[in-house]
Image 1 (cartoon, rainbow, N blue to C red):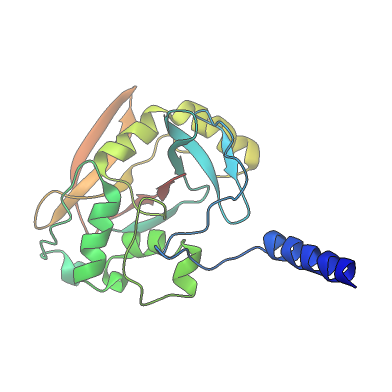
Image 2 (cartoon, rainbow, N blue to C red):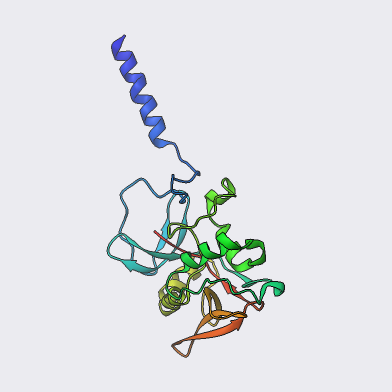
Amino acid sequence: MKNSYFVIAILLFALASCKKTETPSPGGNTPLPSHHDPVYNIGDYFSNDTLEGIVFLTYGAHNGLMVSLEETNLPWCEPNYINSLTGATNPYDGWRNTNILMSNYDLRHYPAIQWSHKRNTWHLVYYNYHHVSSNQWYVPSSSELSKLLQNQTLVNATLDSLGYPTLEDKTYWSSTETGTRCAATVRLQDGQIVITDSLKNREFFVRAIRAY
């Protein structure tokens, strides 16, 4: 009888270990893989149970940034909000910009930011949980977006092989506000990164990024 209980306990443990979850961790982040993290290089396709993207920046062997497979074309904010100075001015850290906007404004009036925010699986369950970390999708800062476009050759090769839109010859919104009426857009032109102050109610392309 003791052996039977032991076998049942082992089976229950195995089932619990195999169960997948779409709910956030206590910190609100999209679940990360439970297996040993592989080594990724720039241009690699990242995929686990809940996430997929293309690696465009690496920090050591197991950490870095990846970009979304999909993109969209949206204004940074609605016309009635173009004169609002939000304080999302960080040129290096896009998730900080996103948190400032989420904490002080209704994202429905900031379409580019809202599109990226809605990519987080936990958002569908915890709509009122207003916090984004680097382990969730967000609109890149002007510096992060520049690094993405600098590595677009390798990223584009993988996007193209998977049948998704590539990055070339496009202007992208960053999350970095540069003035009352403007935010930074970034493009790669003749091999050089060009950062422009653009009116926030204009439509440009948007990609989401996140840490892995």
